[in-house]
Image (cartoon, rainbow, N blue to C red; front, side, top):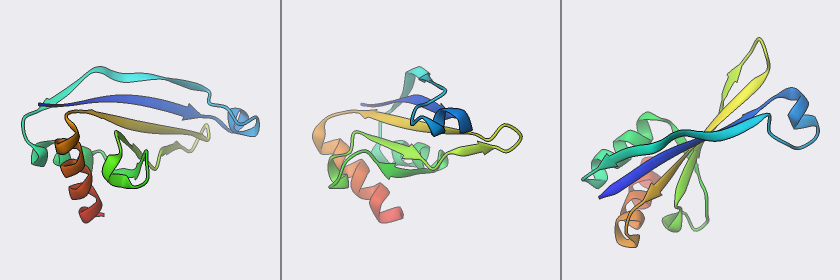
Length: 101
């Protein structure tokens, strides 16, 4: 079983000036559950993950997006997808994500 939960951070121009975030928290605390690596990888790719939380990437327990910009406000919203599974499955997910980049 693979469970993926999602958190977010919103960085405003004002919060960026002081090196902070405007708002952060869970976007989906319950998460999505997947039975296969391919389904989990498809979900992550569909959400445009681009940045692993760790290097080497095979050990990453989360992946983040580049961020979506709200041009009228200048706010940027980042999503991070946290992967909860056994270490062998985690490495397989990460390997597949790296290969597709």
